[in-house]
Image 1 (cartoon, rainbow, N blue to C red):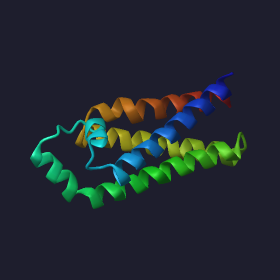
Image 2: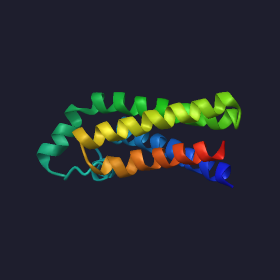
Image 3: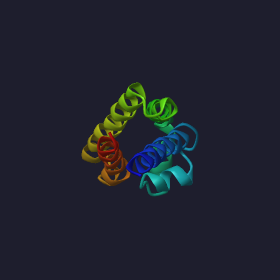
Image 4: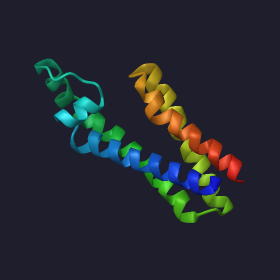
Length: 127
């Protein structure tokens, strides 16, 4: 039971990072991404979004790496290697969430860190 919940949380965290990748790499200066990242639609902010698009694409790529690692862990299943992948990449997500919350937007803690730590706890108790 806990193993199934853990897999569901890992899948959800991975899928969230695919969504973040899409927002940052392909929709950074569009209303959907601006709303997701709490940016008000003003002429100044729209211009800032356009100027920082390359940086956002880079961030999006890193979110894709996190998702790929988590999906790889799911693919490898309950093997030692699969579990190691899941623990490692969930830990990366949690650390990135703490840093993002401290430096950018506090909401990131709830969106990234809490689900990642939930996944880590569920994985641990499923061993």
